[in-house]
Amino acid sequence: MTTTGEQHDALRSLLGAWALGACPPAEAAELELHLRACAECAEEAARLREAAGWLAVDEPLDQPGPLRQQVLDWCLARRPAELPVPAWGVPYAAETAKLDALLRDLGPEEWQEVAELPWHGGTEYLRPAEVLCHLTAVDGYVALALGLPDPVPAVPGTAVTPVERRVPPQEPDARPRAPRVPPQGGRYAGITERTARLLAGAAGAPPQSVRARWRRQTHDLVRTAALAPQGSTPVDFGFAAVPLRDAFVDRAFECFVHGEDVARAVAYPYDPPAPQHLRQMVELAVRMVPHALAGLRAAQPAGAAGVAGAPGTGRGGRRLRLVIDGPAAGEWLIPLDGPDEGRGDGRAEVRPGGEPVASMVLDGLEFCQLAAAHRDPERVPVGEHGDRAAIREVLRAVPLLSRP
Image 1 (cartoon, rainbow, N blue to C red):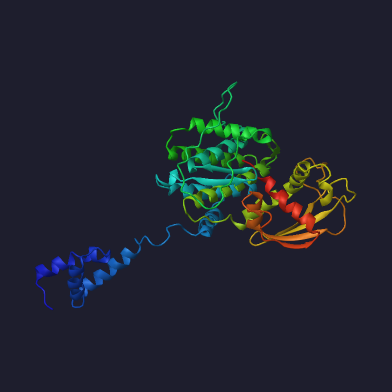
Image 2 (cartoon, helix red, strand yellow):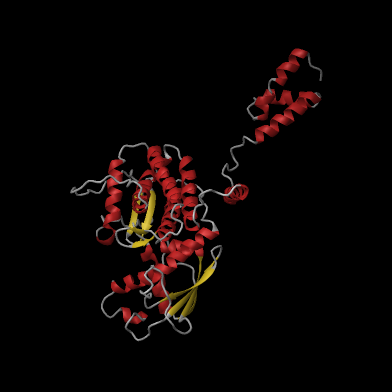
């Protein structure tokens, strides 16, 4: 095939569209015939087709999770941070960054999706911006402990009216719908009231502005935590006071759980925490299990707790061995008859005793999902050995660690 200079230039001008697959079939066929005879155009076409491959939208744009940590480790190895984040603050920094990356990609319609947030009292239905209001409100307890501004507007002497969720009508679903969480009182009243005030203040605000406020606060918390590396500052959540180091791990855990709730609502992939961060979350939850057991027994009818060997049944000092499998692998002994209250730092101290009365094996992520009341304790996959009643009681107690 021979072409004139004018025809050559005309065909060469089609190379860009051809490389992107946007060339009409007839012109594409003519151009491909020309490429067989013109080495110059064929070389240019190969370069353009390769470049077009980098623009393909069918490949995920998100970088692998470990890549970010590898880059940070490399940078810190060359120039250590002047004010490093304490190890107990790193999970919170990582989980808030991961949730922010998800939120950055949301379009207007996705901000209107409704996420389901189960806990042991029922299920809340919130849009992503409303989830951020809740996270901001609870993070505000940590902000106050660190001397930072409270993000929740104070309304002295004014009763808080729960904000009606603007949830659009849903398509009929054959599955039974989890009960909506009623307005909470009691020990969690402070959390629900703070969330309601922040939701009222954010009514009508663009979702991205809600996101920006939440993100500013997370940055402020991490920077300020670096000034208190011992992590002993008490943080009062209203129903319990914990050291700052535990509060940060708690906030990382809730950020991960609710980030996954939002990701599920918008059909977005969401990675689990890094193994070393997941282990800190498991460690904190394990230390709180004896308190959850006490709450479970206190809620039972008189005399019912004796079946499981509650305190006072003559079997004090019993322990259960918990083996966590997977990335956060580890082994813990859980006191079944209450923690030693003499330590004063919130950590459970195992009383002297013999061999554990039971052992159970759980995947680390499954244990965390159970602690968030996102798993049914009767159906969670668990390896069991020994006193089955003790194992069942612990499995029923773990979801009580969740809260609104």
